Image (cartoon, rainbow, N blue to C red; front, side, top):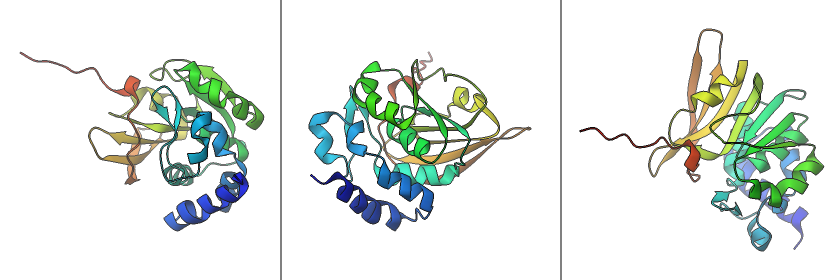
Length: 209
C-alpha cells in the first residue's frame, strides 16, 4: 500500500472538503504516518473514514474530526500542548512546531504508537486521564470523548490556554472549545462528533433514595 498516496487522498477527500483550510495543518497531516498509530493488523484502515483500534478500547479519532479540532485550537509554533488520549493529534501538533506531551492511562497505547511519537519528538507519560500531567499548557486536546465538562483539564491550562474535546453524554456528541481567561472560562460549540467516550472520564452514577 502506498501510504503517502493514501494520506493525500485522506486530506483531499476528508479534510479539505470539511472546511479545514489551514495550510500548515494540511501539510502536517500529509507528513504524519497515521498507519503507525493503530494496531498493526488494522493499519490498512488508517486512512479510511473510520475510528481505528489502537490498544484495548482506545481508537483513533477520524482524521476529519482531528483536523477540525486542531484547526479550531489555532496552534502556534513554540506553544506547549498536552494530548490526552490523543497520540495522532500529538504527532500532528509536533509537526506544526508545538512542544507536545502525550498522556495515556493504558501503556499499551505507547507499545503501538510509542516509536512514532518518539520520532515526532513527543514526550510520553502514563498516568490517569483524570489527572493531567503538568500545568500552564497553551493547548490540551483529546481524541476521545468525555461525558461531562473536564474541569481538571481546564484547570491545567494557562490563562489564554485552549482545550478542544468532544462532550458526549449519549449517542450524539459535540466538539467544544474552552478558553481559560483571567476571570473565568468561555465555551463554544464547534461541530458534531461521536468518538467513543473515555471510560475514566465518565462520572460515577449517583443514586438517590
